[in-house]
Length: 200
Image (cartoon, rainbow, N blue to C red; front, side, top):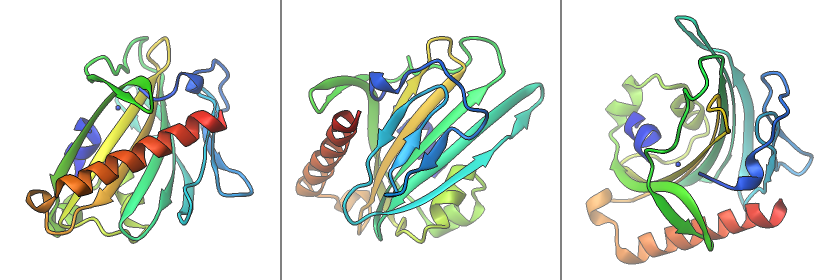
């Protein structure tokens, strides 16, 4: 599952701001919409029929680097969206999305990649990734495979990163995924991105 989080990345230019709000970068409004603030400012509208989860906040450290991370998401039985904001006190330029290809989504260019990943229950049980654990706590169907797309935006000095991860379960595994399934996934994701643009 970790390979999904590291390989599957720039969302909306309206995401970028300069104000910081301690380590609580994500909150939910009264309607369950995700409200992002701090290094990025945006409202991520809740999709119809989804349930909101989070936010959760963490402050992990690695040697001299201190991270501040906020995460929330929208979940249904076989699909989900997570939104995460991460900041670092490391040197300027530490975070980047320049290694990700540019694609067009909802009429706008983004840095993004998508992938289908086969996932076993054993992999889930042995992975201790914080984001994965948050997802697993929501009781969504992950095994045997997930189609995923991830968008990542980085602030100007490379010390803050915002990520949207959009995933849907693939019954029968990646080899069984049909062109119709992928086309619907892509269309639903494009509508989701369009809803963010409309809300901001």
